[in-house]
Amino acid sequence: MAISVEQAIQCMLERTPVLSSEQVTLERALGRSLAQNLYARYSQPPFDRSPLDGYAVRAEDLVGAAPDTPVILQVVDKLYAGSVANVSVGPGQAVRLMTGSMIPLGADCVIMQEDTDGGEEEVRIFRSVSADSNICWEGEEYQAGDLLLPGGQLIDAAAVAVAAGAGYRMLTVRQQVKAVILSTGDELQQPGEDLYPGKIYDSNAAYLRVSLQQMGVEILDVCSVKDDTSRISAAINQYIGVADLILTTGGVSVGQKDLMESAILQSGGEILFHGLSMKPGMPTMLSVKDETLILSLSGNPFSAAVPFFLLVRPMLARMVQNSVWEPRWITVRAATPFEKSSPTRRFIRGTCLADEVAIPSKQANGQMRSMIGCNCLLDIPAGSGPIHVGDTLKALPL
Ligand code: AMP
Ligand code: MG
Image (cartoon, rainbow, N blue to C red; front, side, top):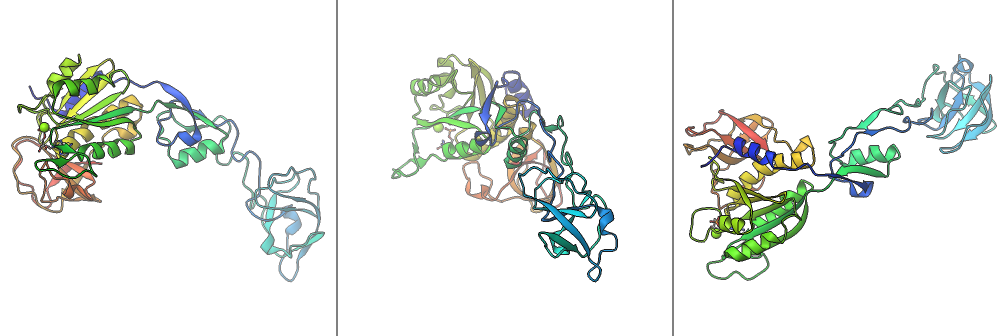
């Protein structure tokens, strides 16, 4: 019996394991899900520092400084970024500073080089500034002990910068989800081969591979097998207990060469559901064996893509404990019409710009060209008539 997508997700999540964690270097952390809260070990910046090239001075010494009445101070030290301040600034004194250097004791502000004559022994200062001017304070960005990145943070370039800036070389992250893609069908040829009569190129394997890679999944293998129960079963067996997810395409419907269910049973898989009450992707099947989930999608490219996005995102969110993969539906308005009625719940592709969605007229399940530029799936409830411009729709950004 066909179940709703929501029931399917529920049923899937009950059998979806949370992956364990591992330590990886920052260079290998991109796209991974942080498995622990990351706290600051030092304050940032770790010391009061100068944001510019200039002189550390006492604001009270600069009172009245102007281009015609410069204040002249004695330069008692010079500091570069990375050097340690040893001399303190007394009345009538200044310390030459370069950007990033420590603020020496005694000084309460920095005057920029452009407001001085740049002197080395003594310096003429042409402007006054108030105390605390031009200082980046210790701990101004964060204090030692502050939470920098919460567990579940997706590691992107900014997160890598924050972790590196806080001195972390290793991060504790969820294991990467490991997936295998298995396309099935006697008609399939691989891109690059000559096309023989009656055959088609396998686009699903390539599509699912890159879609999974975009979601940070490690692809263990991509293979294509003929419509043959034993061969499909053998290909699946190879990765049971090894992959977290085996994605298959083709052979899930009711035709005489639709052998996926029998192949899964031959492999000892437990079928969790077979059939979703929606179009496309109605014959979608989910099975499990030894903690490996096997999601079997229809062969038609768009019929595979729809349940792929609807089911794999929440599956990943659970496995790596990362809410960024949780589907977030938004409300949009149709900018173009869609002629067909939808007796059953239907998902179609669209291109959202702000809260308006353009719906390509070509929506056939076997066609992917109109998917170019599409960035969302639209959820059309069962029993809907044609969609008119201005109608409100639920969209899942891809
Ligand atoms: P099936 O789900 O096996 O009944 O296949 C449904 C339709 O999708 C048929 O027209 C197949 O030729 C086509 N098809 C199956 N597998 C693929 C694939 N990997 N790439 C592109 N089209 C496919
Ligand atoms: Mg087939």
